[in-house]
Image 1 (cartoon, one colour):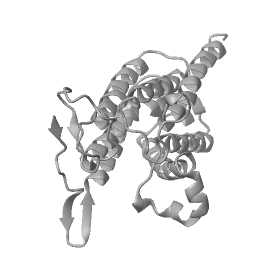
Image 2 (cartoon, helix red, strand yellow; image 1 turned 180 degrees about the horizontal axis):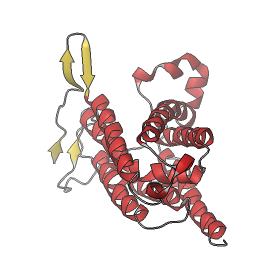
Image 3 (cartoon, one colour; image 1 turned 120 degrees about the horizontal axis):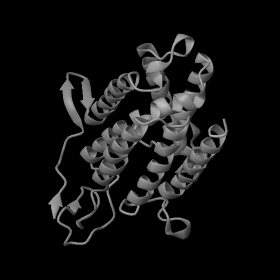
Image 4 (cartoon, helix red, strand yellow; image 1 turned 180 degrees about the vertical axis):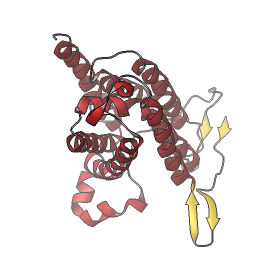
Length: 270
């Protein structure tokens, strides 16, 4: 049985300025996106695009900026709507109190979709092309977010067997060993999904199939990891014994599979 290390949330204190570990993981996520997206510029089909359809480093910077806005706004609004709609309906001004915590991946993803739609429309590029460009660059950012969760000792797992060698006791979660579900999600939704998507995207694919693989892959892996993650205390398990996170993954899985089949039917007819 392991004890979660007592890591102070502030990584560096410079006078009145506090640099938090969680903020550093976000910076790492953005840096990894820039690096991977610039590598994507050298891959097909993007390297062969010319003229107005050509991709550049400026496009990468712009889509990162829009994506960050989508993650922050969508993540916060999604959390308020998906996890605590009644509370925030009664306290609407607290929607803006982001320092109190509360972000939703699924809401952030919807925010990124809106950002991609805006980018595609403003640059007159096919939306599926934009989504395929972005998708393989996302999982490493998700992995960094899970590192931040682990450092902060939050979003811990369900109670584990005392015989589990890596069972961990988390501060504020009682004295029983739990699954370090943040690490599970780091490995599944982060590293594994990245490797699969990156390799999948290196082969010629129909428009939209890389984005579809991300939706389906994340949905399945997150759904699986949720079996080891402690459900939100104020929600518990919902219908069919599934957590809110699992229910939000269901439309991702169906949407990813549907998009992959649709794009196959749509573009193989030509």
